[in-house]
Image (tube, rainbow, N blue to C red; front, side, top):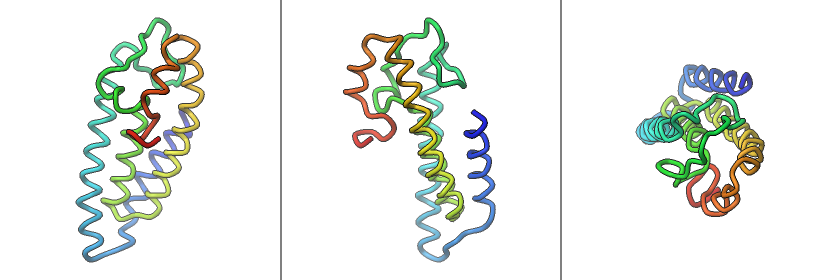
Length: 144
């Protein structure tokens, strides 16, 4: 949790350092970044809403929480993580910051590692998790 918070704050602050590129590339990256930021926020919020009472800041699933496969969880197994990563990439493009982009990549790596432990716990608690894992990608719909 602490590493995640530090990376999120560092990525946000890195975007305040000023753009690393200008001109047409800056305009295009700003528009694309804004769209990704909004899409990431929507995905993370929808993922949190779909979890309902199972939502927790920790990777260990709550006792008695059902395996959620609806809503955002039809797209990816970890939509909150995906939304944060997407939003971080959007922020990096919107702000034109290479440092923020590096922070987004670091978040991707962290969430990939964190989700591995979380998935082991989910597989222990939910007999149908392995089938769900084979059917739905982890962080990027249809890709990974």
